[in-house]
Image (cartoon, rainbow, N blue to C red; front, top):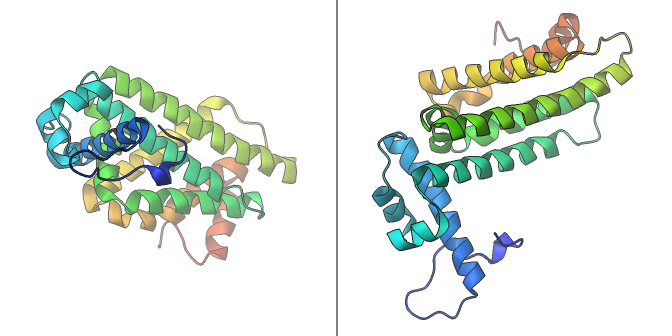
Length: 231
């Protein structure tokens, strides 16, 4: 994909347009990535077809196969692209000048708001990914490892501020990521992704309790005027 995505046209003009072939390919690929996410959100992974994907993207089947081998290949590419965007959004939120606690809160808020901002894609990439086969499962595990590394960075900063905190094994961070994923999926199934921001105090308590202990988790909830129990 071209580095300057602002130059990539969302829709191509009809007929001879003289656009750079790289821009044309990037536009087609971007529309296919978006289309597969929408199709899977609406139809489920099993129910989404290549015919549906190309119809939504406004391209031909020939164009589809110029970019992807099959539906699985297209969906995984979309999943990886969306996951990378979300990870970078959270990383940016956690890179501010505030202390580790406020940056933890900012990262959780950015994560939940990004997902709530597009409920269809949240459903596609958090729920339907489980039906997309072993390659998608492997991608999901690699992504979870990256989330765990991001949380580990915050714990290292917390330990620098509070030397008495123990160094935690990698499996603890992986377990936290899995727990957050499960809570988010449960909320999407029960109420829809638009309500995900309501999980902020719960996820903050969970993460701070892991990083710095339950007492600081309770203090952070009190300072924010919210409680994971009372809302």
